[in-house]
Image (cartoon, rainbow, N blue to C red):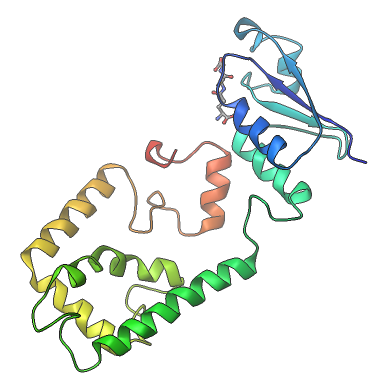
Length: 212
Ligand SMILES: N[C@@H](CCC(=O)N[C@@H](CS)C(=O)NCC(=O)O)C(=O)O
């Protein structure tokens, strides 16, 4: 029997409701302790969260006190989302990667011996793929250089795109806007090389603003 988790919040602050939604979704019993905005930097709350911001939780099942909403929801899914209601297990991720591969194989066979997808000129059908082709390395967790190794016709077709000024302009705009937000190509902040570091920094509130 799960003992109710205590959730500390101020009613006017939106962030704690991130936690209540997850508690509801996962049907975890909880009790709310609420107080006024003026008391957030005072006792007794700063004994729970010395940083003086809500939400914070106390879990009597594990004797854990925790603050920072992203850290809290991450913590809640570990023991309480056994049915994977709000998360994916690795099998689902694997299925997703396999789907991307299956589709690329199909695309590869469609492009076999052809320059473009429809007829003998570059059409909307080709150009609509261009941005996603740029993301394939991230989707398959391989380097940009290796992403089309298994799909030679797709690789040649994708290499034809940069000959289009429109493609180049769109890519330049994309790169410039990402740069302005301090993001690298895979959507993570510059200097972050793994999803684990990304999650860690997100919990500590250390990501660039664009990632919230
Ligand atoms: N990064 C924190 C942000 C929490 C936050 O800013 N909470 C606001 C209410 S929505 C708060 O406690 N404000 C009081 C203050 O900053 O003095 C989190 O995700 O838990």
